[in-house]
Length: 351
View 1 (cartoon, rainbow, N blue to C red):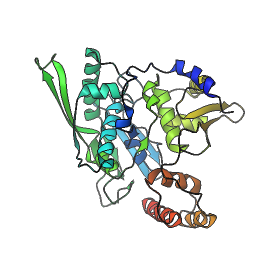
View 2 (view 1 turned 60 degrees about the vertical axis):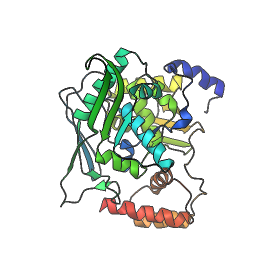
View 3 (view 1 turned 90 degrees about the horizontal axis):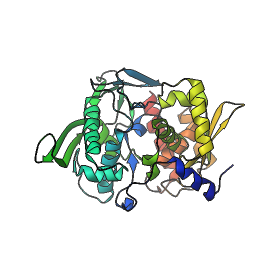
């Protein structure tokens, strides 16, 4: 049952405090790119959920697509390290939307980033920023999914080599005074071509700004999954065991069930109510009404959906429609024709 605004207000106690309440979030949308590029959704988590160094190699598969994450000596990039990429994606998307020139190199003041992602601005926060860059640059992603322009998010052909890349290829930090302890004035990062192509193709989703206020890594990951798979639809559900698998968490199912129940009780997840059904062992997400389709489109005619089923036999056409609605940025002249074109492009990924 949807909760009132007063009920949700009490859930704010479970979020981190808003450290910089005066920040103007209108200057740039909060967006995430990398995980959306994993077709068909976010089954393959790139980031470790543990704050302790994770040194193990992980592999995730979904249909013909696979991703393997190889950490460096300093560990796998964490879901908190990803804040740097979220900031970078947001800035580049902001420029693209303004018609400005962009490239893979982004120069910025780390203080702006720390404020944007709701971090402190003390010495330890700058040190954590540098450590995050170490992990982002050190973690190697191996995958058969390409984001090359015009190629779609699809497996590489047998004739092509599988892809190896770092999330951040190069970084420079400029300090004032001592090169080890001086205050960081500017930073410059070069995103991998794989990540940059995702941004140029606008394969991004907007996040609620309270994402940065979630206290636990597993809460961030569950929100990401809900944001991608529930999207703007009123309701979506998933089996508990399958949800655990998609999070990439190494928790036992019993412990994860307890975590989900706690999240349901506090009901503090941005954009979505969450509930757990004991009898079916299902987790149910309900849109709070804060997530709406990116383009104002009427429902597709049944004939278009049926034609989509013929193009993609055995695929849940409702899931494909949600992907399409999240992907488009403005209403096409002929929504049905545009949707079927999207289905044909998706068909090519499966061949």
